[in-house]
Amino acid sequence: MICKLCGNPNMDKPESHIVSKFFFDWLKRTSPTGFLREPQNSNKRLQDGLKLEFLCSNCEKVMGKWEKSFSEKIFKPLSNCNATFSFKCDDEYILKFGVSIVWRALEYNYGMNLISDMTEEELNDMQKALETWKDYLLDNSQGIGKNHVYIIPVKQFLDNGQPISIAYNRSVGIDFKVFDDQYWGFVFVKVPNMIIIGDVIGDPDSNMKKYQIYKQNTIKDEVLPIIPEVVVRVINNSIAHFEKGAENISQHQIEKIRYTYNKTSNK
Image 1 (tube, rainbow, N blue to C red):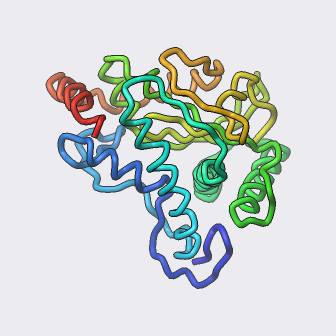
Image 2: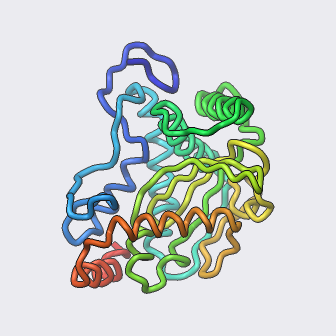
């Protein structure tokens, strides 16, 4: 198996996380049971997130440094904060981490043939985005051009007392969406307390600028954020899908999720 990032043909690491391991560690640590659950099968316990033969140990180690910095300096403070939280995008590890997340998610979707109904032009744009992000991660380029990456904090937005909304906020998922009416296609990564998005096709909504990772920007977690309508559509569709998969959970379990979330989210 060849490393998806650097092309090393001597893969010395059996499996890598598609979405960073620290998100799953936090979910387990703040879970009443210490386990994870699949939305499609709410009665099935999991001990970890999706792992595949993906990266060599050297690439995993490099990404691990960005993940450690992001987890300690941004994710944990955001997750522990009960008020509006903000962070400056001055340090390069933030963009490196964001790019590593959207690159892995898009590479996974593309490599597993999970993306369909694409025009030749759209497929070309997708391949260009993958190459642009890969070059940046490998330090072969200084930037990512028009393939911007965004972080939308949603803790305040989703922590609204509604059991399904709270449960969705604690979910992890990846997707790829193209909206022909907006001519905008992006990879969408839902992790606890935030959404990470990478531009792939077309032009983003102007409201995304406030969430873009660039050095002059400060990103804020707000109770009523101004989120582009197409992103809200994805969130609502995801919540509906999550709710459908979780409909077999009893009312007692839903109340337990709410109680435990409020009790443990500050750990």
